[in-house]
Length: 106
Ligand SMILES: [Zn+2]
Ligand SMILES: [Zn+2]
Image 1 (spheres, helix red, strand yellow):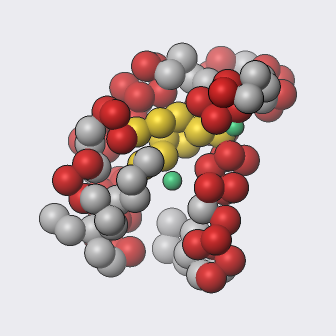
Image 2: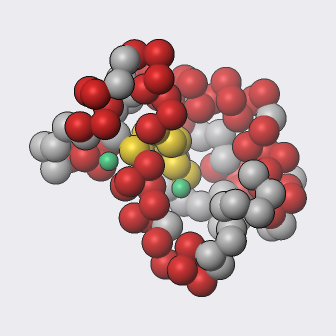
Image 3: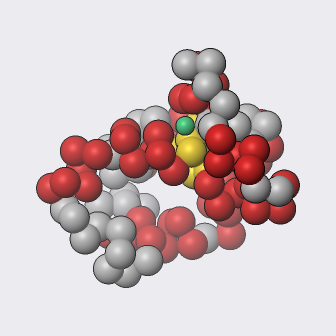
């Protein structure tokens, strides 16, 4: 699998393998945004909402992007927990170019 098209990537993100891996990484990172943690910040969002809803504010990011390094898709060292804010910041450039990337098919 090469993940070159959006369709392939969506299929990946919906797969049971990815969901299981994602949970694993969230647990490994103690459900904390690693970017915020590095800066000594604790995201307010995460504290404000109860445990059950924490997940919604966190994403698991591919450090080396999926389409560039498909072989690292499920490698722990290439995966990191980010809050939505930091995640958007990271992909800012990409989103500006393709504004509809997220809302069209997800
Ligand atoms: Zn963050
Ligand atoms: Zn990402």
